[in-house]
Amino acid sequence: MREKEGKTVSNNEGLRMRNEIPGRTGIAVIALSVLAAGCMGRSVKTPPAPVTPPPAATAAAPAPVDTAPVPAAKGKTIPVAHGLPLEITGRDGTPMVLVAAGTFDMGYENGRADEKPVHRVYLDAYYIDKFEVTNARFAEFLRGYGSDMDDAGKRMIFENKWGLRKADSGWEPQAGYENHPVVDVTWFGASQYAKHFGKRLPTEAEWEKACRGGSKTKWCFGDGEGKLGEYAWYTFNSGGTTCPVGQKKPNAYGIYDMHGNVWEWCADYSLAEYYKYSPARNPTGPSSSSYRISRGGSWRSYAEWCRSAVRAGDVPGMKTDITGFRCAAFPGSR
Ligand SMILES: [Ca+2]
Image 1 (spheres, rainbow, N blue to C red):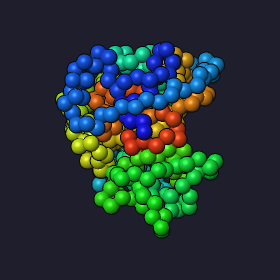
Image 2: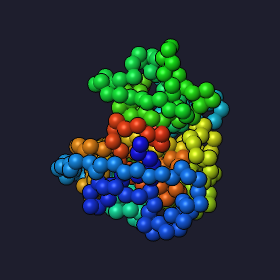
Image 3: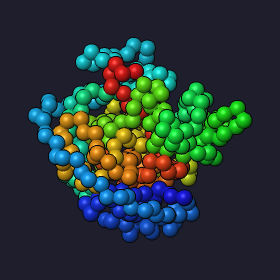
Image 4: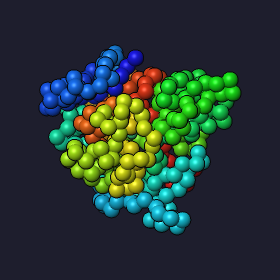
């Protein structure tokens, strides 16, 4: 089974295998990994087929910079910004947070090759789930949808001891794991869930803007790794498993667990060189690839892999206990 540290991530030479551990900190982290619990077994997967980049997009004039964080709604009164409520409830019953229209700087100049160049991106306003989708929510979806295959016949979910089990009466959460993020969910399952509730998966750009919460640093709170444990479940505090959603601090936009807990599927195909020609407005990713983007790191990731700009590519139908998702939606699309 593929494991986190065997995650395939793009780079300037094209998509290929890479270790969990970034090169500059590799030696130190390898030493730590030896000391860490024996859950760091690694496996590899086959590099994806070559893909053809779409024609270069025409960059539009940049919009005014959006630097104001969108605060989390408090109490029963939902504030409104630019005519839109700051927080809404999706059809699946989950709260969604408004990310206002505007620009942000995507990528990280001191990061890996595929995180460069840093480029300014304008995004229309959108909503994004405040929390990762939980086992309870996904089980409820499956019971309502009536199948564990998506509209195209693709498998959506696998059983997992921290996730879902298939009982005689249908899919249900493992006891005690109802509020943990769903895992062993394929990209197809994540996409079908979103579609079922009038939502969609976030684009890679939407995910990173929501993760950054207005920051330009390695993590949403700054560059100091020492604070990551306040915001994220990752290898040094997760206890070797997923954790209930929403227990750590939210970022400046009021969104939880963007760093760690589970990697999160995004809508985009994965391509290392994409930032070199991605459009400046509402980028939606390359035209094709064998892989889909996932973001944010997981319960078993080292801090470097939980950075806001880290990009990963995964086989969309794979079984993995480190990847889940959250949904996005355009205003008025619910
Ligand atoms: Ca996450």
